[in-house]
Length: 202
Image (cartoon, rainbow, N blue to C red; front, side, top):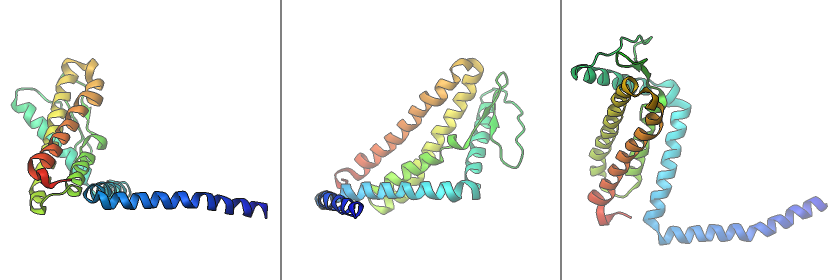
């Protein structure tokens, strides 16, 4: 009996607090409709992407493999055209994930480095942010291609660094180029929010 009374007291204690929080959130949503919509769509969109990727796309599709293979092939072809000799690294299966320059040990392009999460992050922002649907149709693929191109430049730079400055490879891989690629994404967001949508946004 004492336990039930304690539980009931706790319910009565927290009930008004919960009601106040719900009331404040509802009021804020009404007063800041576009902002609330942007945050809600952005959060739910990224949550949906994370769940879909974690429980299905990562293990049941070849999406990552295609992106990584494309990065390897493009990077090797470009470096060859620029006059560098590339390593002949064997990758089992139809898709490649290893590359490097002669004089280096070679690099492995992993799933965490293929840019898929960045594609999703950029696209969800554009989808959640106000703007004409027709503009989103062309801007999202353009933005994804731009992020992929930045990642392709990053891979080639890491190939070069591994040969000439191997001691700085880890730092540049984890920090320098990560900041640069995210900088590209923020620039794309800025162009969308300020230059394309402008005063019609939030």
